[in-house]
Amino acid sequence: MTAIDCHAHVFRRDLPMPDRRRAPSGYDATPEDFIAVLEANGMSNGVLVQPSFLGTDNSYLVAALRRYPTRFRGIAVVAPESSDIELARLNDAGVVGIRLNLIGLPTPDFNSPPWKALLTRLRALRWHVEVHQLARELEPVVDPLLSAGLDVAIDHFGRPDPLRGIDDPGFGYLLSLGASKKVWVKLSGSYRNGSNGAGDATAIAAMPLLKRSFGIDRLIWGSDWPHTLFESTATYAHQRSLLDRCVPDADERDTVLRRNPQALFRFA
Image (cartoon, rainbow, N blue to C red):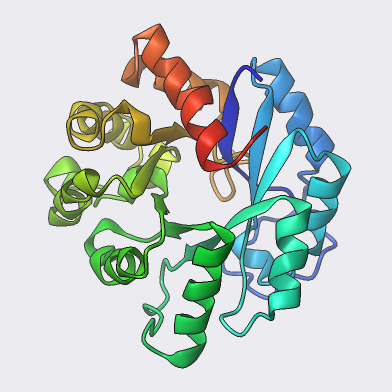
């Protein structure tokens, strides 16, 4: 195990897509396609994150995990009413957490009985919760998850405002979570935080602040392959090279690429 890509999506264009707001069109992104990309970029393993546009039907994700049990781990999307049987099935397949992609959606009512029950079961399974939300909206999502005793991974540098960058108060809130040692930050999807190089500039400016607040042991990297909705402008090679700029020290980079995700995603 040399390096782990902690954020990628697999799908086929003929799958049912109940949430088409973010759905790409015209191509497939299969597990085999992803393996080829990993190997071409010196990566050995990956984490498959259920795409939001496939909703809570995790069957394609589960099939990929069962086909490549040592290569992949999974992050599912589930309804709060999911049964113990369904969660156990996902766990057995190699799922180690759930994702809340809340961009453009209301914050869940974590005090409702279904959500309270789900969070309790997630803790029993030792799963973590991955949060994709704009920085200014992180607090009402992350605070209840931490209060429930769960570990949390924050997608895409915390999604700071493209104009404010690291001066976004929501990014300041993210930095305040470092002392908890319950939060990981994904160094991923910089292009989602501003166009024409603004997202990369924010990523580079954010790194010393993230290292100071979280320590290198709570940072992980993901390519966001196949860069849905940004396929024409984002590339795997650029995202990987950006990590070298953000984390120039080779030992620290090995921690981000291998040691941290090996522990968080429970790779053997």
